[in-house]
Length: 243
Image 1 (tube, helix red, strand yellow):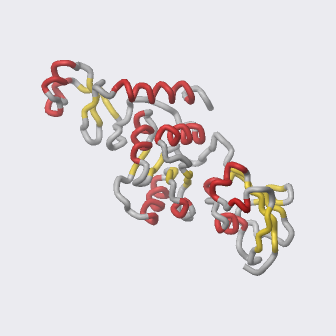
Image 2 (cartoon, helix red, strand yellow):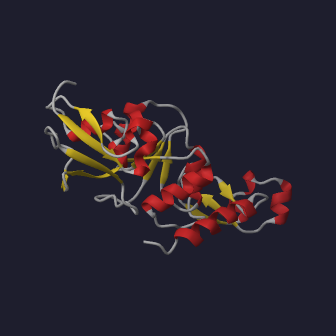
Image 3 (cartoon, rainbow, N blue to C red):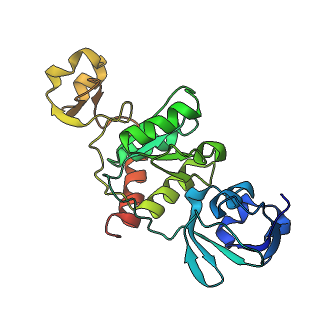
């Protein structure tokens, strides 16, 4: 670029995305004079999904603003809880976030998941078609213009990932109502209706079952129920009543 020079300051919450040299106050950036501020910010490493406001010389501007010489830009992080207008809050997770998808479903959150790598264009297209918030650690994917909405998942640890998504979006929680395998809704089922999926010991020990309306998978309070219950209890304690 060889045009107007501006100064850009990133909020601490966005420092993950920028070099160390840009983490301490406003630093100079040379623009081309025609690119939008949104393009400039993304060229510096920050997906616009993570930007809450762009403030130029004290006034908030849209991402379409074309920077002029000597302007000072503050790039602020998304305000939490983040509102996603225009559609029921639903998520789409890429192939690397399977554990997070299952935990969101455990809590009754609508979380579609691609278990194979279908490519960024197809993921972005599905996000737009189904009006789902794309969750990913792929910055390139989150910069695609077709996305309905998106959010970077900051941690690689499932517990921290779940906390981050719940804290950022505050989805309504309805534990034990979704299939963790396919995201379908669960319904009560008689033992006889799911008998073909049960081992002999399970048939003898358990009497309360649920079944997925979509894939037919059976559920009961088995050996791992205490671990799942702990995840649910932590989520409900932290977020069930927060708005």
